Image (cartoon, rainbow, N blue to C red):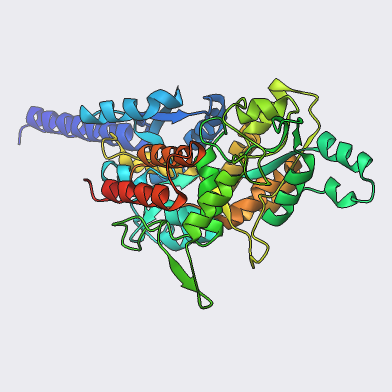
Length: 452
């Protein structure tokens, strides 16, 4: 080989080595900007500030970076409740919509087909057994099917008893021998006794002050939820085990006696608005229950924790307390009614894995605590109960009640609510008997469940 040719080959070899080295250096030695992913997150009630801390922590979490090395941006959008469902369904009908969304605990029967369940890839993931151990038991009932996880809640709310301390103290001053009146009722029997002594009527029997906001449909906040609570407490089976028909009008047998817990529950509830009954304390002419309570014109009402904020705005000087929801005297353990939301991933999400990674991260113990500190909502995680009771004692009743919270399978929650409201009004207007009203309602709910 000639000397010039040898020099040429040598130079070419050096250039190739330099190019290869530079190539390897570029792809191995120099850090590249991760793939950018922007996820949209739709919800209700919460503001973006309630999630900003979680989103920032997720972006910087080392474990999440190892699982999914992406530059993730999550944009939260708050909707008005009245527009939320329509916005979701309109977007999904076009194959669009959010990557993460909040789903109500009663919506899974209607929304399951739109959801990508959590991808359980390995034993360290948020598997079904870990989910059951971590969250209140009602979440497993509402948000899992066949061992698959469809949503994860950060908080769970329950109905509790709000009571006006001034009204109870007024009665005690007039009847000092009855000191027990100062304590909120723990059973429905106690509740009836309180209603009887603090309700005020004029000489013609017209209500001047209500003992409780109970008995009607449209002027009581979450009246249907209160009736659901009473039905569940009395052992009413709301739907069949195979979710094909309504059972809440069904007669059953216990201890050799035949009775209908659904009918008894409906009668008990509506008796509070029946002028012919001793416990008559409310009617359709009353203002909305929250307003009446805020004005000091009703002694007791059932409501969720978010009413604390409403009452502080409406009546900052109102002297009231919060106690657990009344239970049946013979109940061996408490039963409360749950109303809450969970984070989920629709099948239209552009990156279901990263979306679920965020939900897994957000629902971990320390991150749920961050969210609860921001929102002042009761925890969905059982292992945060003691911590939150100490940090937020004003929520203690709601926090503890989450452990005994229940709900029921609703094929179409909005339609079922209307059916129950109409059922209550039939009794209020004396246009139907208890038996006929509840049986008609059960037939309508069954038709919904069967798509008729």
